[in-house]
Length: 254
Length: 285
Image (cartoon, rainbow over all chains, first blue to last red):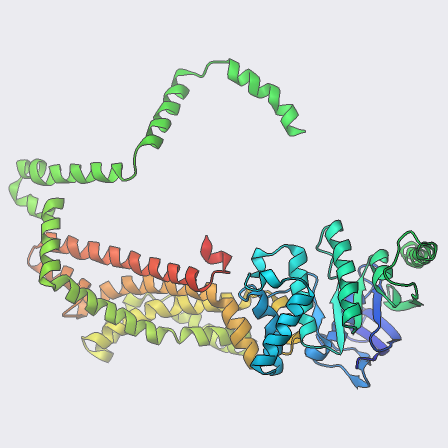
């Protein structure tokens, strides 16, 4: 469950041919096989967040469609749930209540949703913090709760909007390793937006490198390095150089 | 960096002796800081006692009745508490406030609807903006004609005092909810109805409670005014009734009861809010 197809997605803000219209996305097309981890890499303003918002059902594509298992996405819901940069935890709910919320919305029976929630609390290592409120947790812990909350509803497609951007460097690196560990235990189709080349290489099976004005996919790179990925490995460095050149071209041409 | 630059300045400051005035001011503030709380209050009460019992009677014995001494007020208060008179009137007032609050709580669903659906806001807000600046007291003449003199009329005036603060704060509370939380809830599959109850209402609760606090305060003020005009019980009635009998001590007991109970209502709501919403940073300050 969870074959993602982005089919000729364009997004134009404003009237189509009006002089002040902005083309945020132009004919973006790529596919991600089931249970693969795909990153969208690009500078801010290249339309990567717009694409993610369309995949989440928050915005509509002007033309084209984002499809999961052949069905096009046009509303937000648990099938294509999103993890936000600022965690977006409900401050009035405990860790447990935050995670159980999506299951309640989904209509899962009481017994089952408690079991599922316990499972995911354990998976992200927050057993001792079940009853805490978000304001009592550190940034890294909050993002763990957000990850557990999103995984608990068993999405067919998991979307992440720069999930570790608000963390400090040590925490970010640690959380990236954690995400790989969790994802390997429970594989999902993931679409992650990032501007960090290292984050993209560390996490992904495939990387869609985007350029701006109009936002389009410049190159779709497949990563087949063994996990966990070694930053000092020759092929890692080579890939990093290649991605950096792809992105820098875009920067220079601006 | 800053510390390095300022360090020499501090040293020169310490070497020069402070001027006499500065030294005196410093000593004065230190001494004031050492005083136990309520000293000023006690001094004022003693001064009042002296003025009422000795000073004013020495000028004009007839004037003394206008300013009863604290001791007289305390005796009157004790008498009114023991006889149950104070309690009876307090309960009458509280009952009116409570009934009015039950009706005024309708401002919560209305405020949520106005904060959430733009068309409803656009339609209802102009009406509210016209009605809101009219003080509850300005409704007294019309309300007497509508309801006659009695509980309903009083409750209507209090209702007007409570309703608008709750409404305005509920709207603000709904509009101030972080939109990312709405998105997160939708992304977890929340349907519109559950979104309204679990996210919008709960998210706006701290602000709603603030509205209830302000509203009950305004309502309490309106209550006394309403009772002054048209009631045969209640704290407002006590003080107006005592006026006609020149019982200034009873008036002041009534006034103090109004103040203390108003404070207690406010504190109770705040404490309840903190208890029920431990996550709210707004209520903690």
